[in-house]
Amino acid sequence: MPQTTIYVSPRSLGAPERRPPSVSTTDLARLFAGSPALAGVSLRVDAARTVALLGSNGAGKTTLLRVLSTAIRPSYGTASVDGLDLGRDADLVRARVAYLSHATGLYDDLTARENLAFAAAMYRTPDPAARIDRAIADVGLVDRAGDRVGELSAGMRKRLALGRILLGQPSLVLLDEPYASLDADGMAVVDQLLTAWREAGVSVLIASHATDRLAPFLDGRVVLERGLVSAVSGQGVASQPPSLPDAAPATGMLS
Amino acid sequence: MSDLRGEARVALAIARKDALAELRGRHATVSTLFFSAVVLLLFGFALGPDSARLAAAAPGLLWLAVVFAGMLAVSRLHLLETDDGALEQLALYPITRRAIYAGKALAGLAVMVVLGLLVLAAVGILFAVDIGGAWPPLVATVLLGAIGIAAVGTFYAGVTVRLRAREVMLPLLMLPVLAPLLLGAVKATAAALAGDPFGELGAWLQLLVAFDVIMVVAGAATYGYLLED
Image (cartoon, rainbow over all chains, first blue to last red; front, top):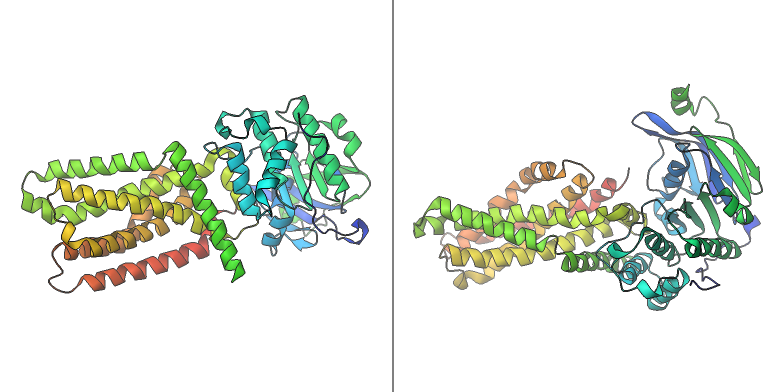
């Protein structure tokens, strides 16, 4: 069973009201083979907020998270994380953003512990041995720490990928369907992580269909539809319609 | 300076990770060694039992085997990064792109050096070539050749790793670029084996050094663009 209190490495974040928005996008668009997955998203998520990205399959949730993580570049528009431009300051943004995607990004031939040791080296985590032990315990994988990742179930791999996030110092965590593949204990780990990040002042953006489970943790909701924001609600989140004609290249294709 | 030290530590961690995965899975070593042995044996059969002809062909065969096997090795090392989105995760760590390139190239270099020395020994045995008397320049040539192949191979393996036709595209892209290295390495090996009668060995080694420097700098400067989508 996972521990009841998860350790989140603190970054010196300051008071939320004095921090720049965790996420700010203007007319953000991303095309794949000429088709817009994002078609002009102007969104602001304030610091230290937990916000759900909702919408049907293909609405653009994953694409938005991937752009914010710097995994892919936007085709049009601008975006920033903590006031840092995604294009100009990508290296600085990567130090502040953690991203859990559908793929776990783990190496099958390495053990769970070795995968985390590699991540700790990449994050330059201080006191890595202790932090790795703690992360493994936090995600409930103590008994499987010495097993190769290729031998772990999908749920265990997801837990390990969550443990990897604990080795960095993110101010923004992006989660894509974090409850997928997880059993009840694994889902409880996600719940505890959401609580820990909130207490540490870390912003969280979650793409998920598990709206009932997420509800207690959320400050706001953003609904995406066909690459555009169709509705926002709650606190710490705001959106504007695309400011044509600047967003014309993407939105024009939709029309 | 501390940034450079930090990048060096990151590069070593990436190379160590590749080495560990390689030791576990033996993706690159076994396939490349087997491939090299097959190439040498087949060329040996094709050239016949004439020992003088085999000895004359030895430098070319050595480097053909090393280059072909090197392509396999760097390709296999990059395939490690296709494990469940590992390459994308590697690109998302807060590390410089040149550190990623350096780490992957170091891992490739380690495999290439081991491979080059084993193939050199195999050539000595199979083709009755005396490599014992010329081992310092031969080892230097293998080392310089391995650096060049690792530098070029790491870059082009990064270009092709996400392509379906990567097995076809990698040699098509890599071999033309490696032509100067192949020329210099074959000539340097032949000169070393012959006792350098015309004093040309140094010039060929200088060509290899220049090739390596250009390719390492170009690879480190441009590899990051391959990681972006």
